[in-house]
Image (cartoon, rainbow over all chains, first blue to last red; front, side, top):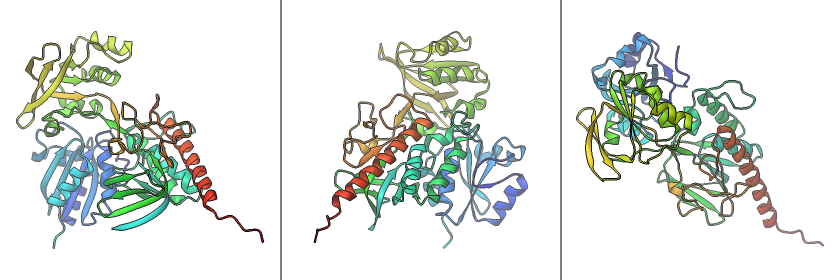
Length: 117
Length: 319
């Protein structure tokens, strides 16, 4: 089962690791097809072309494999979907809980996932 | 500054904006769709659309993507996730300034800005969003299993979601600003008679407090003006929708609810400016009504453009 978005779907912990290994900058939105999550997927789809140096992906929150995000220390205290994680060189540089707007997402991308010079 | 001219600009890319774009571009009208957010508007939040004629079941997300594809295939240009700096519609040539570096002009404009969920706008709301404050019971209810929570609001959504949250929470307190509820009687009865639900009327949330996560709310009693803390593990906010018309104040006529006033042809009080969708003054807000309004707006805008071009065409001199 996967999310009905146009983003790259992360279906397993192994795929999650592969994406982190192969991409310097990664944003993964872990959620469901609900009203708090869908706007975030939509923004990610819109930003994909602009932020070519960032790999955008999603992961189904209810998949057992999503433990890599659900149980991450950075998600402690999170009480709202989606859990959105930003990785640089495989390390979490930022994580957010619940819906975020475009300005908030852009701000994190610009601050934490800037392209290498 | 980059300048580009279109015959028509559609502001907004929900079902109304996309429908207008489909009709305009199919009529060979050079059309630009400008949107501050993502394509689809409120429609993408609908898990399953089961009452869109001709389509048995489709997700709002999928329907939005189909409409977007149709609009693009007919030639509409879609520019989304843009920051709209200024809108000037009074002159013959309408202008929309975007992202601080681009000015789009057009002869006709269709406004389809849609609506959004209201937030409380009180201190702490942004800080604790996702850390105790939620706007979706279906999405986040399970995070509050075994906890005591607050639901803010007094309409059908608040009442129904309060009942649905009793599946998870041990106690739900509904905080509502009026002394009566605005929901349907059956929804009011179900909530008020539920053993896990308590009600605090004529009370508003003044502030959210906590450390790493939400620990409580400051509640103000509107009768006594007394403010006191109320410990809670979570707050769900359901206080209705509002039209996205902030940038249109003083640009076109709005009613007291900040909805755009239109005539039967979806024309606003400004010549060459039409409007459709959830942001116009009307009673029913559905995908189908947005699509219907937008069809009227696009056809009326096409006719208006045609008339205008005919008036401007120089007459042949008989020789």
